[in-house]
Image 1 (cartoon, rainbow, N blue to C red):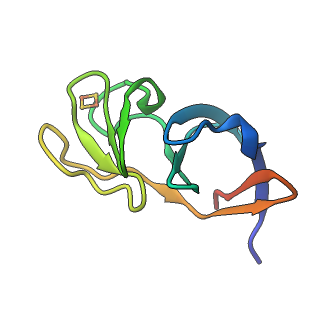
Image 2 (tube, protein in one colour):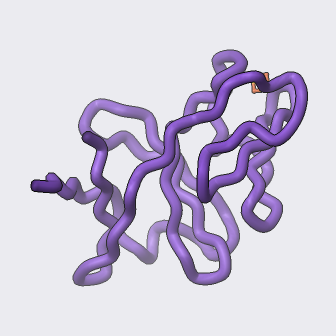
Length: 103
Ligand code: FES
């Protein structure tokens, strides 16, 4: 049984951009790419940088600190200096709101 937690209004996530939100006590990044919403941990797996302060290019988020890149669909680390992926979370849109499954 999946527990869906409301994370943001859909309108609050700008097209082809990223925002940081706190959901269930966790720092989460929400991305909007080509009309799809994706969610991942907001803290980089390499150091203490918030990905929402980085640069989103298509499905790639670039960390603001050392320019590591992750794929926002999978959380996969795409280049040095990253050695660890980040977690992504299932997303659903209902009644104009973004819900996440964090468990
Ligand atoms: Fe993100 Fe170093 S903290 S690449």
